[in-house]
Length: 127
Image (cartoon, rainbow, N blue to C red; front, side, top):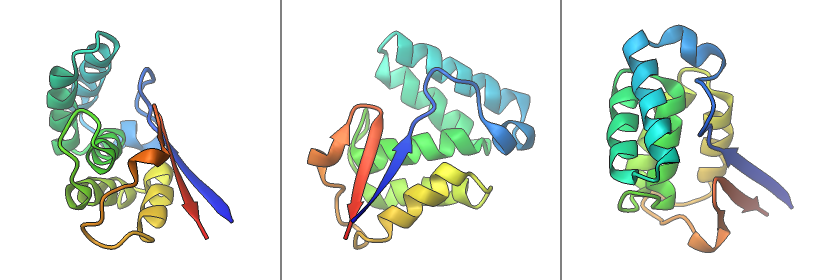
């Protein structure tokens, strides 16, 4: 049995290549999203995360995708989640690649098992 995990980067600046490929505006939106998360204003968190993701920041794309897959702060939709995570993986985001690999064990449209969610850490179990 192996375990796949995806950690969100809340409270941290954009990582690695993501910050170099993104516009300053995308990074600014990501930081604003993080500040709203700290204030527990989840509506504004998702709004700014979405703006950052739309501008191509891989960290934001991954986090938004994880939110959709897990149903955190948005209505759960694994198809939308996979789309965002794939966009991040296409930019060589290693966490997104790992997460996408774990998601491949789920059927399209199959919801993420909520009992496996642990706060900011999402754990998949693959047999």
